Length: 448
Image (tube, rainbow, N blue to C red; front, side):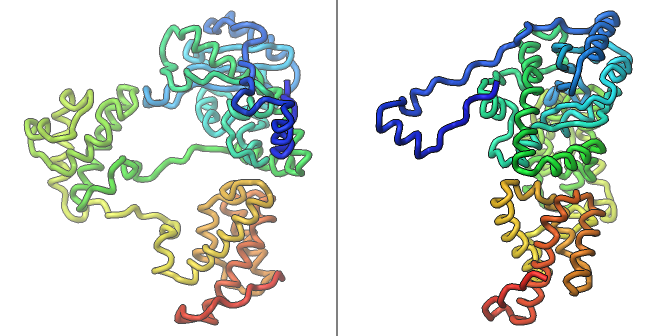
């Protein structure tokens, strides 16, 4: 299935001048991907599940999996459809809502490798129904490590396999029952060529010497847990426009009320009232139902229906003591935002600048995005409070230990730790040579 290797730009231009190929705008689009075995029936009975499990167990090699959620429609992150395909087994579409347990499917898959695209999106909802991989291959992450600028499934399939994927049903409500046939066709296509895509990506990883990096990344994903955000209400859209701690308290009370209602009804919070309505009410501080409903910008399906709850939330915020009001900014155990470093610690700011400059170069050389070379939070934490020693060898060992403690993989530490060591030492040299910040930067520190 892989497409022919593309011509170089220079060769393509020469051929156009010679008249041997048509200009780019006349190139035929890639062939539309279709289901080679037809659309499988959706599995929603015990007998059907037993048949699927028998086929999966009889198959060979890795298992391609995908899950569809109802993001934007439901509060929960549950899986409403599971798609899988294995060599010798064909494809299957399983409705997990129809079953009390997916244990038979987990047993049928056994310790076979999973192939997922953007694994961190699907692993939590699959774990919720009892499906956990023993090993996995993430095609999106593989694309990042290989330096592809766009790593969406449709783009990788077209680039590497020469087929176009239709994506028109990516944002539909998968909690709908029965699921329309076009939606099921779309879902089945998401695993149609994952087996082939894995083979192409794996070959490229081996060719670039990055297969060991990829295995470390994939193994790390086996323990993936979604981030539980502290003070999640601070992500309310438009919060930056809210002034005063009491108004912030109103945002918090309204947000938490909405979240409680959304969880109880299992609908996405924005379908009750949007963030803009919360900001409008918190800013206007209406004291009763009538004034609340006259507040410009306060709207949504649940604005009038839950008016009494919104007023109660606003009244709670108004009655809070100063000690109960939220801080203007979120308290964290990590370093401040990078834009505040220059004022709070100029030497730390210099470390970060130097490290980022060298990481940008390393990213280009290795054809790996900088954020995949090292998680930005690990970078900031290490450089804000670096180890005290300045003996290069000891410093390198301590930086590696620090990165490992944070969760960096060994391939990342091997590449990035020397960069951080140089940034730490060079920033100290610059600070000593120019304590007032007026002289030219000092010569760069040599590798130890």
